[in-house]
Length: 97
Image (cartoon, rainbow, N blue to C red; front, side, top):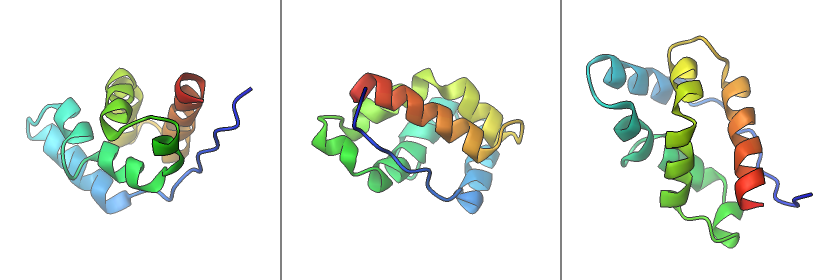
């Protein structure tokens, strides 16, 4: 069992709306998730325990790319933030923890 604990941050509602609009206007989802100003850097700034486990922002971005379907569903309003990010936390704990 892992002792890595990642909290569920408050939903970035305004950023989520911007990211969804970017995807709907044709920007690739992977770029929206991983590039500067995207979800990966936003989460990495909040989940400081990851760096102590040797998980870089780029590593987190790769996990997000593998989890992009659930994140897409959150951006489109088909999943709640809690559902999407709780699943992501579980994935990260299994891989990094």
